[in-house]
Every structure is written in C-alpha cells, then in structure tokens.
Image (cartoon, rainbow over all chains, first blue to last red; front, side):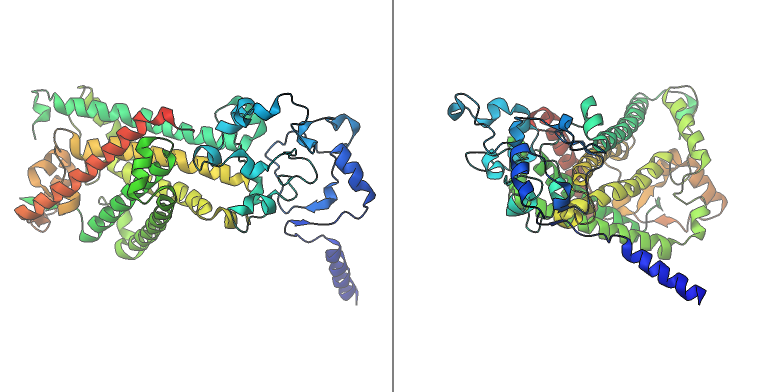
Length: 220
Length: 267
C-alpha cells in the first residue's frame, strides 16, 4: 500500500514538471498590456515559449535576471523599438542603408554572397525597429515572416542564427558570442600549429634532398 | 624489381578520396570566393553558386559514405590483430624518435634514419583524414540542412559550425596541396610523381633508400620475392602520370587562386 502511494505520488509530482515544448507563440492573456508593450518595448516573456534560447549569445538591449524589466533596463527612444526606426533622421530619403550601417552591410553573407537587399528582410518604409512589437523581424515571428521566405520550415531556433555575424577574431566577440570566438581561435590554433610544424619540416626536407651531401650516409 | 606497397582496395580508397576531396575543394572554394571573378568562374563550372552547393553536398555525402566503407574495411578487411604489427599505421612512440632523427638528417647532423613501411609523416596524413572527416563531416552534416539542424540545436550553432567547417577545410586544403603534394610528388627523390599509390608497387632501390628498415625486415623474413610486383605497362604508367599530375596541377591552381584572392572576400 505504501509503495503504491509512493508511486502515485511520484506520478503526480511528474505531472507538475513542465514538459519541453517546441517554440510557439501564444496570445497574451491580458490585452491591456499590449498597449504598454508597444509603447515601452517591454514584452512579457510569457508571450513566447522558445524551446531553445541563446545562453551563449549576448543580446543587445536585453537584460535577463531578477530585475529584467526594471526601469533601469529601459532604453527609451531606442530606434530598435520604434514603429519607424528612421523617423527622426534628417535627410533620410537620400541616404542608402550602408552609409550608416556600414558594419551590418559587410559582415553579412546574405548581402555579400547572395546579393539580398536590406529591405528584403527589414521590410519597406517605414522600417520598424527589430524590437517593435509588430516588426517582421521581431524575434517572436522573424522565423515565420522573414527567414521562411527562403528557408522553408524555419523555426524559432533557426532564427537565432546571427545574420550580422560578429568578426570572430575580435576581442569584443569573446564577450558577445564566446562560443564562436572560442571555436574560431581553437581551430586557428590547430591550423597554425600544423603549418608551423610541417611547413618548415617540408621545406627542410626539400632542401636536404635538393642539396645532398656527398657523405656516406646518403648512399642507398 | 618492384615491391608491392598498396593493395587494390587501398589504391581504390585513395583514388575515390582524392576525387571527392578535389570536388569538395573546388565547390567549396567556388562558394567561398563567389565575390571574386575567380570564384565566379569556378562556380560556373558547377552551374553557378547554388548548383555548386548541391554538388558540394553530394560530394560530402560521398565522402562520408567512403569513410564509413573504410571503417568497415578496417574492421573486417584488416582486422584488429594486424593493427599491432610493423605494417600497422597506428602511431608508435618510435615515430616520435623517427621524427627527430629525420629532422637531424635534414639539418645535416646525423645519417638518414631507416624507416619501416610507414613513415611518421604518412601516418600523420592517414590519421589526419580521420580527424578531418569527424570535424568537416560533422559540421557539414549540420550545415547540410540548417533548418532541420536548428530543430535539434540553437540556430547560432550554425554560425559556429560554419566557421569550424571553413577553417578545417582550409587546413586540409593547405596541408594536402602544399605538404602532401610536395612530399609525395615534388621533392627530388619522388619527382615528378610517386606512382606507388596508383601502381601499387614501388621500385626496390627507391624503397631501400626511403624505407630501409622495411626492406631489411622483408629480406630477413625471406618475403622479398613474395612481395615483388610487376611494373605497369608503358600505357598505364603514362595514364598514371597524366592523371596524377593533372590532380597536382588542379590542386596548385586552387591553392594559388585561394591565396591570391584571400584579401578580396568577406570572411
């Protein structure tokens, strides 16, 4: 009887453990928050249940932790949260994207190899900030609205790919994307060690055979 | 007189590995260098940027299948017992000693060491393929279908896999096209090409000079006649030279293009 109760207790306890769920977008329960979110840029985390987050990739403009949504985290007026992220710029109409976004236009294989234009992902005017609630590139939906235009079936996790990849050789990348930085430097280290050992070895070998001594040891 | 050095199966594995590697190098560089005229011309051979990726994926699968077949060959064809013998490609502590003795000879400090059947550099080349297959093959599988992969791993893992794949591929290309080609074909004793991997046998005088301990062991065991082989016909030799040297030329073409255009692409 006791063991049966213990098993029943374990089953009930197991039911209380949340199951792993694939990424899914859920409706906010309290609609009154939506206006608050749109104006402030703070989105309640419960609105999306990602299966995989990005623990090793530092997100700009985002704080996690006990006081993730505290007032100090606010970046009021941040263009990344505005419906028209370029609305406050003067002479905007005559400026090409790459004039200001130099780095984003160059560290981007979608642009330099495939030839995609910025607007094919970021949308037409007015271009909303990526953190804006209705932006196609908002993390909530970028996999469905943007990535899957070319990568059919792209899910939330797929959208965690960094299109604007930081240069892995830079020290700053060790802070923002440490896994990439470590992987890069380990692989470069292996390559450098291999060549540092075998290139002089090969050169010396070639020279030794090219200029054989007349000594007895070289006779077959 | 010639001495048999490679079996038919080993030569076939090397031939297929060489063809797959060349294909992978050419299609991979075509993708990587598509920002340059050289890369675009390379990609055109395979039908363009997108087609080069399809060929690259097919070549990668072929390489992985070949690797699996080789593992099966090791287990069922060679057997574990032969791994311990002197004909084994397994690294031994004496290989380290051979390396330093060889280095001493290169520097003119000591006589040339007498190597067994496989030199330390040949063992390195052999096991480097295993390392490369695990690294390049593993990351290649991840990148084969990034959407499917991202269902089992975070999407930023694709950034990491891409860089690991790329650096390991460049390491393999550099090692094969510079170090392996030079040692096997371009140094004075092997010039213009070591036919052993195509023909299966090596000239006895050459083997005595390069692998003295192996020939001494065969002679002491009375196996020299048993291991002797026939020289290939003139037509076959010409075909070996034509094919082998064209592969060397292709490799050097890819290497020069890679180095000359390295500053013109987005890394």
